[in-house]
Amino acid sequence: MTIVITGANRGLGYATASALAADATRTIVLAGRDVASLRAAVQRIESSTGNTSLVPMALDLADLASVRAFAANLRTRNLPPLRTIICNAGISKMTVQERSADGYEVTCAVNHLGHFLLVHLLLDQLQPPARILFVSSGVHDPKQASGPMEAPRYVRAAWLARPEHDPNLPADDEKAGGQAYATSKLCNVLTTYEMARRLAASGLSTPEAPITVNAFAPGLMAGTGLGRDSEGRTRFMWYTVMPLLSRLMGFGTTPAQSSADLAYLATDPTLVDVTGKYFQGREMVESSAESYDRDKAADLWQTSIALCHLQPHESPLVEEPSRVHTA
Image: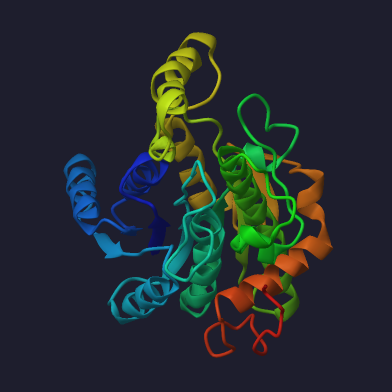
């Protein structure tokens, strides 16, 4: 079987690739922007596990053309059947001013739109029983977005991609950046539930040949690369203070711990037909009240199709070109 993991050169993605590669029957595609870093990750994992079926592949989630190129490239590879897609890569910015190659706010582009397009493009390559996992975060829930964490704010999906159109965008750019990250993680959960519903309704996923879609919250992993774009006091807190407090006070988790949980969700046979669920670690729990909003899920789905310019020939879940107004 083949497993695709985005953001596999560092942090949770790398640790998960390592955990999954312990089984030499698995082919792991390590996807990310920095191919040199991916190759170095492959060498380390091969050395520690003995698994030589590791494939580094270029993928820039902030560039929809790169996502399409990745899917086309994967199709040409002579790899075992694709069974699992782990949408792990993510960024957190202290601003909403940065734009993707396609002109969208970059946190929304990487954390949501890039993965949304990737999964659609790979659907016809997935061979059931198959699994799709979106790595979300507890901060998608306002109840968990305490302290320095901002709560999500979802009004219109189009405004997430182009926040300059939002009349109530926070004036403080760092606050807006934190809000964009939390909202992107809410989008991961909304997409999980909507995709699970649509796969079942379309007949692409059946009890006999399931394609499951679930969301995973790994917990706070202070000191990981998620804070690489932070500065000053925020950077000091993330890389120095929080890891120390986490160890001393026993909160949060580590990439090693969370990767074991994510690998479990990707492979455990008892979960072969579990879909449309949200996991904290290995525990199936309720996500935020907002994440079950069907109207927001539909708005996000249709707007994302339009923003990604998805066409019917690219995805079995796209029936016709979207006419959603995305301004």
